[in-house]
Length: 150
Image (cartoon, rainbow, N blue to C red; front, side, top):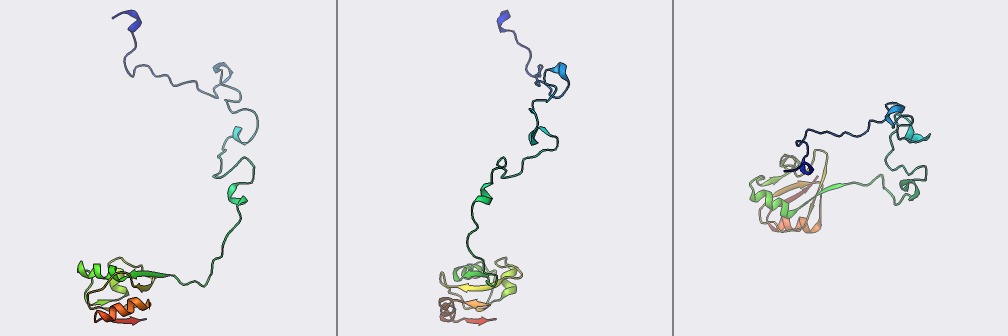
């Protein structure tokens, strides 16, 4: 050990930097590193999301696009393979209606339900829903079940 290797114990020296805005004697008084004038020099300033220094922001430069039909009816789609999986898991028995679908968490309270034809259905089910695709209806009836439209 020699004098060139001496150093203070770990954690004993805490250099927290210069405190700004504490008078002229500190060397960081006056404007307190904020410069002169402008929004960023003022207290209470916070930059808004998307602000580009007064330039027209991107979300206002890009034009609106498309069309939203206010009369559109949204259906919650449920495929046949989903129904078969619920039968395999013994979550539904021989009847499938809105209450049973809601209780297993497939649909919400106010959802309109449409049965879609993906997958295959082996179980004999009486399915009650708002709409059916032609292939789904055919598959349900081919399995010996019944498709009831609300």
